Amino acid sequence: MYCRYTQFSYAPGDRDSILRFWDEVGGPAAAPRGGFQGALILDSIESEGTLRALTFWKEASDFEEFFADGDHERVIEGIRLTSMTTGDRDGLEVVSQVKPEADLVRLVRCSVKEGAADGFRKFWRARGRELAETDRGCIKAEAFLDAEASEAVLCFHWRTFDEAEAFLRSDLHENVLAPGLEQFLTPIARLHTESL
Image (cartoon, rainbow, N blue to C red; front, side, top):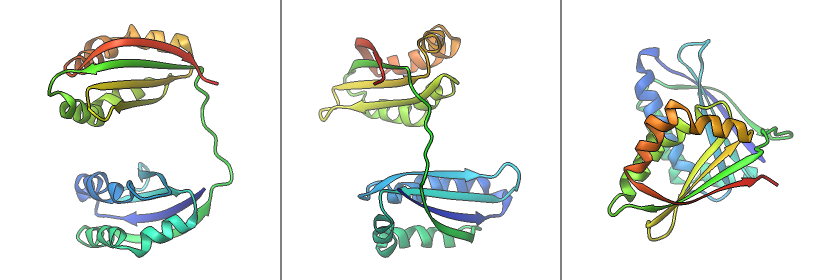
């Protein structure tokens, strides 16, 4: 795997607009590209006004294709309209990757309420995923919609069964996440699976 690293400096007073740029423009520009594996946008808590961007690609050539076309140039043009200036850059080979193990994957199959698909998308992207992933035991939370947007599958990766059960009993789940999801979804089936 190939990683592209870039450091930026920006006027600290512009933090909100800078983070919004990466959320709305910079990050999504690479998302549809072949070979793109994800990105991390990191805002320093020790050096105010310092941001680091890491993008991950299957091969260096995947990044080079992106770099050579208009999508990347539009990101550069957007950066020029902000207070960001570019600092260190580097191309990196990922030689080791450590991921936490999920002992339990909890799947929830749901029907999508009439006309609720767009609302569900917005809720999940803005709050739903983050609400689940704030729990220390949750490694990853994902949601999938079928082609007709009539059914959804929620997929939660947990370190242990006990942590998953504790979250289900928590105020965060019972009073925030579950009611939020129930605006849009009706559960059909639940399955606890062992990660192989």
